[in-house]
Image (cartoon, rainbow, N blue to C red; front, top):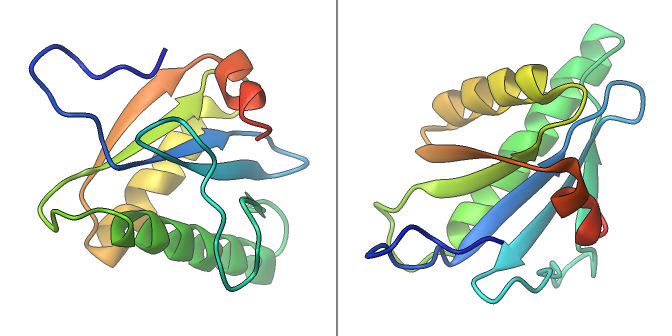
Length: 126
């Protein structure tokens, strides 16, 4: 399901996003074995990025997504490696892709976006 193309190593961390408008984008970070990674400080594995509504809500969502991207990047050994982002193909895919692309560029984080089924995202509890 999340196997890399032949000849390419498995990413050390994958950011999985399940886009939504009303509830926001649900996020989870998976390790190379497909297990959900738990952030030690907050003991949380999942997060939700709200990006619609007031300017304050939108700015907080962008900040939260930047933090999640940075944390995903910190899980990788190779600083040059792109962060693999899998976005569910349900409602909001295009908007989520644009938002992730913009925030990653602002933070100087190189990403590789793949489309996954919405069922894939939900399978990981996202």
